[in-house]
Image 1 (cartoon, rainbow, N blue to C red):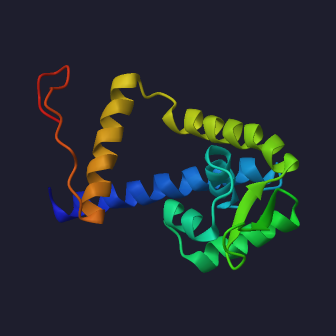
Image 2: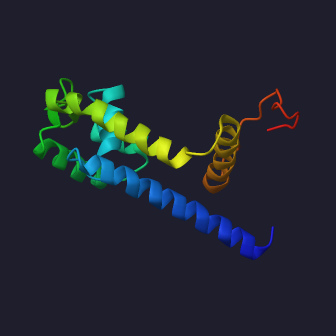
Amino acid sequence: MAKADRAATMNRLHSAARLARTALAARLLAHGFYAGQDQIMLALAREDGQTPGSLAERLGVRPPTITKTINRLQAQGFVEKRASSSDARQAHIFLTDAGRETIRAIEKSVRKTEKQALKGLDKKDQKTLVKLLARIEANLSNTELPQPDDETEEGTPY
């Protein structure tokens, strides 16, 4: 691939990612959430009572970033910190009732953004896009993709 084509491809990837984040952020703001808060809320909805460190690791962000976001969510009344029963130095983060009530709104915002982003792409296109993005992620994280034994419908290996 020519250097100009690679640059155009990366520019499109950056632009699409930025526009997707902007569209989701606008929807979430209507529910009182700021960028990044949704990920913490959804992670707690899947597994309540995580430590800030485990949340940071799970979401791939630095602990100070998580702490700042948790403090804001706590001030908004969506989460609460509780000391660990086994180690009082360690805090666990739990959704409040208000936090649990907002999960559906967050999930709906995510679905609407996904629908908007994928409009006009059929299932085959979406499957191909997922594979291509997985390859890019693997390349950038210096990891290998698992190689399935089966083939795609077109008869070409993944």
